[in-house]
Image (cartoon, rainbow, N blue to C red; front, side):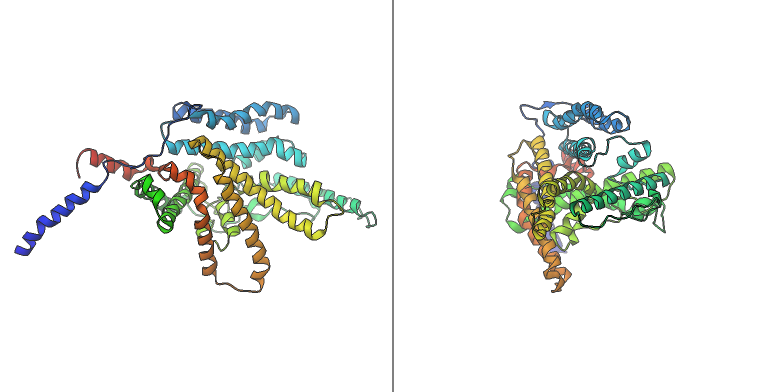
Length: 457
C-alpha cells in the first residue's frame, strides 16, 4: 500500500506534464486562407453561388438547340468566368471549401471545354444533348445511368458509321485494295463496330442491395475522414518540413489516404441519398466507386493511375488522350513515309504524356489559385509519372511475359517509386500546411478545442 501511495504523486506529475505539452488549440499550423493582393475575399455562399451560375449554366446550355458557332460564342464568357473565378476571388472562411471549389471549377472547366470546343473540332459532334443524354452526362462522374433502348440504337448506329468511315479511309490510302461490297442492311441491325458494354447499357448486378447494406462503409469512411485530419493537425509545419524520408512518407500516406476517403465518402453519400429518395436498390455496376480497387495495391505506376483516376477518367481520356492522338495521327504518324514501328511507339507514348501534362497543368491551376505558389512542381511530378506509366507498360508487355515477379514485390516497388517522387507534389502542400485543409471539419478537433478552452484538461 505504501508503494502505491508513493507512486501516485509520480503518476499525477507525469499526467499533468503530458497535458501541459499538448497544444492549446488545433490545428497547430493552420492552413493559410488569406487571399493574395489580386484576389477579392467573399463569403463562401456567394463563392459557390457564382460557381453554380457559371458551371451550371454551361451544363444547362447543352440542352439549347443552337447552331455550333452560336453556342460556342455564347459559352465562351461562361468558360472564361469559370476559369478566372478561383483566381480572382477567394473565401477566407475555410481552406477546405476553397480547395473544393477549385477542384470543382477545374473539373467542370475541362469537361465543358471538351464538350463545346474540342469534341466538335475532333469529331464534328455538336454540343447539343437531349434530356436523356444530358442526364447521363450530368451523373457521369458518380453513376453510370443505364442507357435507354433509343440511346443504345443511336450509339450502335454511330459506332457503325465511324467504323465504315475508318474502313473507307483505309481503302482510299490503299488504291489497289478491294473495295468492300455495300449492302442495304439497316445500320441498327449491323453487327460491326464496338457496341455498348453491358456495364454501360443495362443493370447487370444480379444481386442489388438496399442502401442500408452500404451504410457500414459510409460510417467507416466518415470516421476515417474525422480521425486522420485530427491526428495530422498536431504536426507543426516546420517539423513536417524537417522530417526525414520515412516519417515524411508516413505523413504523405496519411494525406493521400484522406483524399481517397473523402472521394469515397462523397460517392457513398450521393448513392445512399439517391437510393433513399427514389426507393431504388443499389446496383454496384452503376456507381463508379463502389467496386473500384484501392490504388495502394497497384503493381505498377500504370495500374496505380488507372485506379486513382477512376472517378474522372473520362475527362482525361476525352480532353487529353483523344485530341493528342487525333493530331498525332493526322499530322505525324498518318504519313505514308512514317515507319510502322515508329508510328506505333509515338501513338503509345505521346497521348499518354498529353494526359499527364494536362493533369499537371490542372494541379498547377489549383495550387496557384489556392496558395499563389511557384509554378512547376506539379507539372514535373506528373510528367515523371507519365514516363513511368509508359515504361511500366513496356516492361509488362516484354519482360513481364517471360519473368514472373511476385505480386508483393511489384506492389513494394510501386510504393517506393511513388514515395520517392511524391516530394515534388507535396512540396507546395507542406509549405502551406496543406495537410490541414480538412482539419476544421473534424468533430474530434472541435471537441478537443472546446475541452481545452474550458480547461477540462
